[in-house]
Image 1: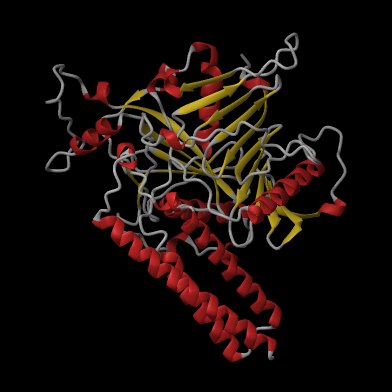
Image 2: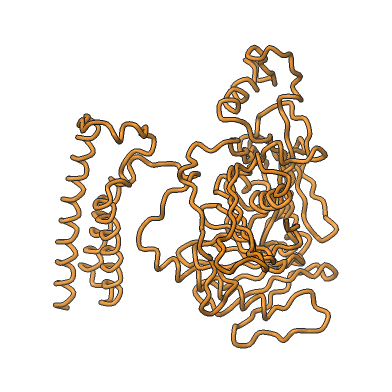
Length: 499
């Protein structure tokens, strides 16, 4: 099958599923948890045109040698950007494995007064944890960073919990309980680990990285800014933090098997639009890799697209003015970061010998963001649940109360006569959209069922349990609140029409 060099497009969607395309027309998809994959093989040029495309669906850790290289490459891409890595032992090469004495995922970063940063060969600012189990590297642009850390390999669910409970003794010292095994195993035979690298944006910062990133940012300002006073205070004036503030819990590997494999969904149809731009995905995406360039969507009230060309620089769209892009270009000799502003209508021409075309890269990023925004607008109802999604049992009861709060604020705005008719209309439209979504959930009551219910209970006789009575009562109350919300909206519309 295809090698890694045959990859033309890699996509990670918001549910952390992965879709990879190859030059031969083949397509490989990973489930959000990484436990399962589907391979859609390319069409045979000598075969009959009506012959169906061959599909292969396997558990990731049991993949045959024919597809092993493809699956390893797909997992490597997934683990760079996913919240938690999936690390089956069978797909981690022996030279990347190392013994791990403890399953404790906590690390402590150095204090301000004792911290020392390293300058990497490409201008990266490097901060190491006290035990060197984790290393944070801030790019010379100061806009993105990577974290390299040691992570134990994926285990079975019950084995993972038993390892956690036995990794610390009564005095907090590392220990391993071997009472459940007939074999006397050494700790390094139980705990196997590997190195994982996460690529992250400074615009979407997880709390676990805030302290080490603040250390790196201080050294970055010292190195890349001539006037440190504009951004950061001097190191001598910074006070040391407590050990709890300096502690981070590293991401842990996902379980070896998925508890919800029936939620795995495969995009059998082509996820790329065929009308205008064939390389742009039409669904909600998180990461797009194309021709060596990485495009990252930053979701928010105003979505952004961030480009990582791979040369240490970062190109980012400018919020509400998405026709403008800012290029953060570090200059190592002058020790400064130059900011260049581009407009879609006046992108710089290509220069002979340049590593990548700014015009092509920015144009593609703009199309990705436009398709993402369009898909987001067309997503009228909540998507199907992901196998990584934590179910919230109360999620369908919180919607009416949100209506009450928002409508109360809406009436206050009207009474203060500070909002224009257009802005009130926008708020009313937003509330109506929420009510449509809520009514959709009521009409499709299977979404309200407990996913943990045993399948056999669905086919049993119609026995009304106490929980079902409670649910029906809550649904009735929710419908009453919805009716009240509609009346309140009608009152606001009537009031606006009299202004």
